[in-house]
Length: 170
Image 1 (cartoon, rainbow, N blue to C red):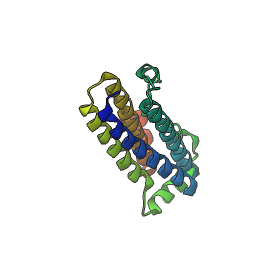
Image 2 (cartoon, rainbow, N blue to C red):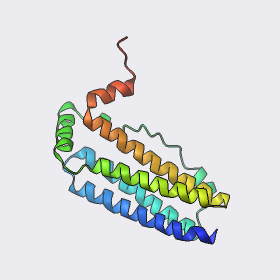
Image 3 (cartoon, rainbow, N blue to C red):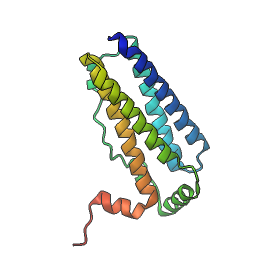
């Protein structure tokens, strides 16, 4: 592995650890199932990234393993369909009443990580390292899309479903 990539990968590791801690904290402090489940899911994702980066730094993680990881569908909707109308209203109200929106903060956090990985990707020389960084970039982008989708849902569940289903009244 390129020696000049170890320092940036350790910085990436610190980002992932901070992300996991943030998502875990939000999940513990949240009062609604939607936020709890969303942020628990993201904390688990960050924890997996931490392990992958550690393994990669040690030279144990091969890109071949990463290539076998399932393709993700950024339009998950995995939590949206588990709510009834009353839960929608409560979640939307809780989201609107908070001065600090963890979803917006998390989107910025994921965008920052993506940009850092992209910068590292552009500087990396080896294909193995570049492939691993590309994997991390895709992961961060998937998280960003999930968070944005969650925000769209929270702001207007009705519009979210109209857009998702592609309904048209023409």
